[in-house]
Structure formats: C-alpha cells, structure tokens
Amino acid sequence: MIEIRRGIKILSSKGESARADALSNWFDNLLAMRPRIIALNDHIIDVFTDLSIVPELQNVFAPNPGKYPARIGRDLEIAATAIAMNATVVTVNVSDFLAINDHMRLPGLYNPDTDEWLVRPRRRETEAAGEGGHWDMHRLLSTKVMRN
Image (cartoon, rainbow, N blue to C red):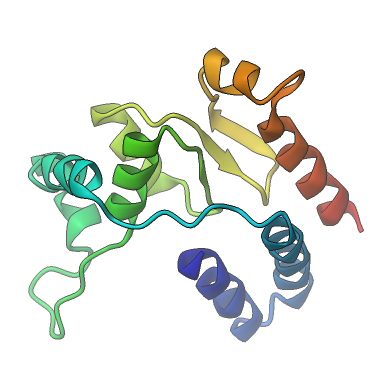
C-alpha cells in the first residue's frame, strides 16, 4: 500500500497530475473494498531471503549499491509476500517483478496503469473467487477509473 501511494505522490510531484489522479481514484476504490493487509511471517521471510541471495536480483535487493544511505528495495519483500500468500502483485513498476518472476513464479502481476496482466493468476485462484474471479473485478474497476 505504501509503494502504491508513494508512486502516486511521485507522479503528482513530476506534474503528471492526470495519471496521478486516475491512479489515486483507483487506489481509493481499492481501499474502499477493505483489502487484507498482510503482516510479515516466517514463510514470507523465508521466501524473501531466498530471493535476496539470487545474484541476478541483487539490483532489486539493493538498488543503489555503494551509495549512502544504503537502501533496501521493497520489491523483493512485496514479491515474497505475494508468493507466500498466493496473492497478485498490482503495480505500475513491473520491471523488477518480471525479473523476480524469472526466478520464482509470482501468483499474478497486474499493471493498473496499462490494464495489463503480465503474469496471469493461476486458474484455481480465480475460480475460488467465483465466476470471472475477483481479479477481473479489479481489472474492470481500474479500466473504469482510468477512462474517467
């Protein structure tokens, strides 16, 4: 949630107010659905540490090596949570998640800005949500918000 809100604020500060407003409306509608906020647990930590030692993902783990102050990227933590909880990652910053997906399959990856599924949710996840799946509801919601 922090990453999404931060991204919206960055867009706004760059003068991309139409895009920021559309994503902010989408995010507000998402929050109105009262999504479950997931706390770190042992399983998530195990997946995170597995991802953090993959050599090809070091730029995701520490996006600014050698610089002060050191910064650990949140994308590995987000991906680890999604993998451990079988949850879809929703982001406009998909490049790191596509790299992560090359090493450990994400349950789903959706870009609300482009209305694109880069990693489709597994069938059993969408079936469990009912006909069409709740992820299609998110897609329809974001498409409606982006058009307005």
